[in-house]
Length: 179
Image (tube, rainbow, N blue to C red; front, side, top):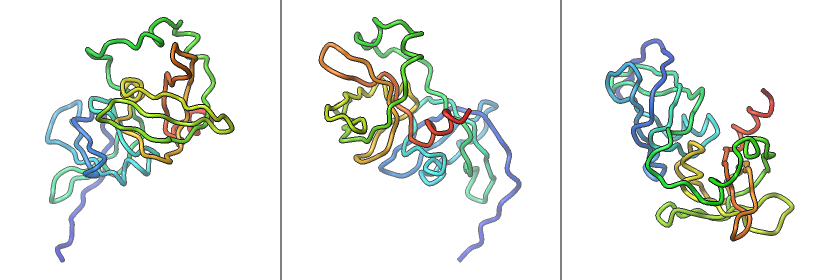
């Protein structure tokens, strides 16, 4: 078996070009340019996320290998810039300061269908389902959710019931709480 050669790591900022949780990898484009950087699902999982939204800002440690540059650690992920997606009516009507002040609630993903653009989660000790829209997920810097995945949600009462306004991976929420 051929031995992989590695050089020293460097820390860079960039944007996620694309990430496919089913394939287990994606690519990052460094802000300073250069070749695409491989982002493997295991590196993302070590950060505490199972997916990341296309276009999300990311700070990573990169190592140059004989197969090209690869991310070896994720330090931060920032949601993508708001794009052409229409605002969600239930969320758009709310005061941004009120949204920011909402508590993070621990939850578990019931199911999420990326193709349909939505899914549901359950907040611990509450029987009702929480609606999770793909646009909220994308604005939170995530691309997909897996059944049973532990997450934290900011929740509001929408016209059709409780809905998430922000989604954080469990590990990200714990880090945020410590800071």
